[in-house]
Image 1 (cartoon, one colour):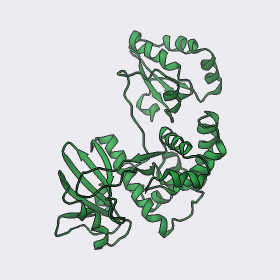
Image 2: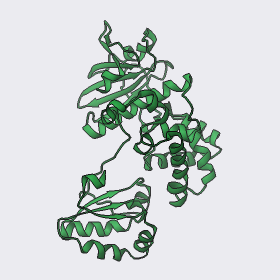
Image 3: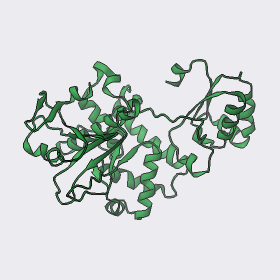
Image 4: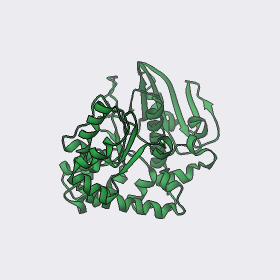
Length: 348
């Protein structure tokens, strides 16, 4: 994408080991190379997190020569931990997410997306299963071990498949720590690593201050179903038990991606009263004073139980619409105003 969007840019790839070691030992060599570019030109630096000290030079050349930099990386953790110059006020942050249906067009298939995800490198692979296995292995080796993000790599390797089981679930760090055989404080750090390496995110609980008390623990979602299933070492056809979490997770990421690209909402949450274990609304989007409630159901038929959460939240101030997304073909509206949409109508 960078090559297409900036065809005339000068490119510096820090995956080139010789170049990486040169700039690591002599950051001034980076400055010498960049200084040769004409004022106002563009420089693309890939995997910038490998040599965070280069950002000082980037800052200087932005100010002195009005150069434009495109800085790419798959992890912000090293940048955060080393007191790095983060170019406050001089840089915009953008994320490239997995493919969405609008980008894939007629090639999009929901069952394939739920089984293997929609990462570009995986979607276009001749064997998606092999590509995902390699991706999960390279993540541990390149991102975690090579960058020394954790001290206990075996513990982190045990943590990953357990964390995958929490996809779309309320996060219970005590349970996760017990199953992964690591300390609870360690689990909190591991979850931050998943977020910093752009593999997972937490969805906070909404506190409406209604008559009922809401749950306060966040939910955990992986950014791609294929990655989540690869770290679980479970890449066969999804079981009936898996489909609900996979579908909910896919809707979560669809909302997150369009929210990022198109600024569809300001904040988002999930809502669940603590006293009612089976009552929940998967997603509550807010923009200004308006709120939109979205429920995801992987079944093709919609029954009263599926509408329980959306009916329970009806009295929330500012709620302008309630939507249930399902895999069936029919678009409907209930007598109390809930929109029931097939997935194609939802992502259109």
